Length: 340
Image: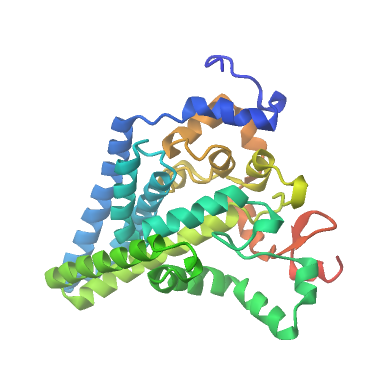
């Protein structure tokens, strides 16, 4: 690749992207350490200030849980890069950092890492749905359900269930036991139980310092706000109007990565806080690119900004898209499905 005059994205074959993006895969380990420091230190400081304030009856301290949740979300994005081996590009360092952060994000790292790898290998493939993604039925599958089955799916796709109850279920309950990985050996169970024990130990220490009341009043809002934001981001990364799904021989990894994942165009502050995860189509093309180098790719290939781009306002309209219309090859609402 010519670093000064990179080829136009419009002239690049989908299969060439892996070679092109390999130029961005090498992390700067000093930069990675800096990214970790400017995330974990503010998070710890905000948590401590909020906990001490509430402990002494200064309820304004609860306001600090909002920015603290933002930094916890950013920690999850670092954990996410560790899972792809792209943060330090050193397997042992990435894995142990990911496991440590998993105690804060309530996410058993090795269990999540396996499920997330399946998601990356099968995103946009109608034949490989079910692990590490938002459950999405086709119009014909939905029509074939019983009345009770349709009601359950409608409840699942309800925004209150998806973005309010869902984060509680996933981060506080589901990830405590890896039932979806029963056939994957002891690894997911060891990861989950070890993470659970570490969570209990950390919680016990914090409760000893500030008391159980302040701990719950501070930590639960932080976790729930961060997890709700995380699920929202994961949702809009693949559930948007111009997404593309396919099946059988039609499914191609590079094409699905580029056109089945969105570019969530966020304001600079939110883009920084979310670890550039909105540049999701590039991330799916090459998950080994460190998150802080993703903007570099957009700078060199500005044409990528027009592929799968959605704004915050446009993303709000994505909530109604709940079924895949096989005939018209697009996501539709329940109302649209009745006439599809």
